[in-house]
Length: 258
Image 1 (cartoon, rainbow, N blue to C red):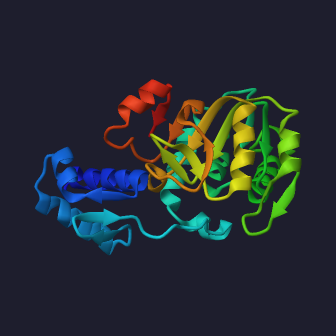
Image 2 (cartoon, rainbow, N blue to C red; image 1 turned 180 degrees about the vertical axis):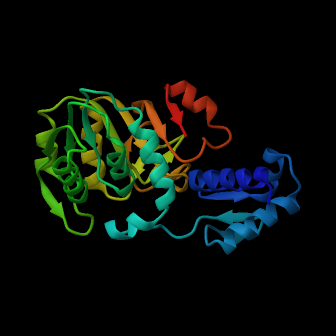
């Protein structure tokens, strides 16, 4: 498959995640290729268990659920490492940061060498543990603040009213936010409603909002709305934006880093 073909399949998945279904003829016209080419793309995507073909097009698979933390750690691991390195470049000396929970946001911590006098708020137990370890080794220079709240043992994070109340007492320069879906139309979304409320609180207390999301989450809408695209300043991903997103990104003032 050519690079153009891989990009086309990625764009097809973005459209599918946005709309729930796609039509062969419409895709053929949009991408200016034959219907046979589109059907071949859909065949390959179905073999990869990414969609279900139906007469005239394809539909989304059944709704996903959020994997446990240790499962998320190994999914798209290489892409997450790339994103962590890119996102860390946005951090400056003396910044006050929130590093959201999630295996993608956690990758940022591996790239803090040379950053001075940081204050980092965290809500993830694995992120806290790693940051404490780095400070003991002398590779992290700054303060660590753990956001209190009810602990979710499946995902090793805190959220809920206690955590939300604590965030009301802070203003941060930058928040690095993990999400489950990024949509040009529907904004950023998550699987868990309580978690979405807490992430929304992080965004409201931040001057700059940075969404970290690998390509599998781009063009995807999940059940719980977190915020509109206009509330986001940067999207950091391992790949560029899908075809047709340029207008929405420009309209909402979102910078794409990849």
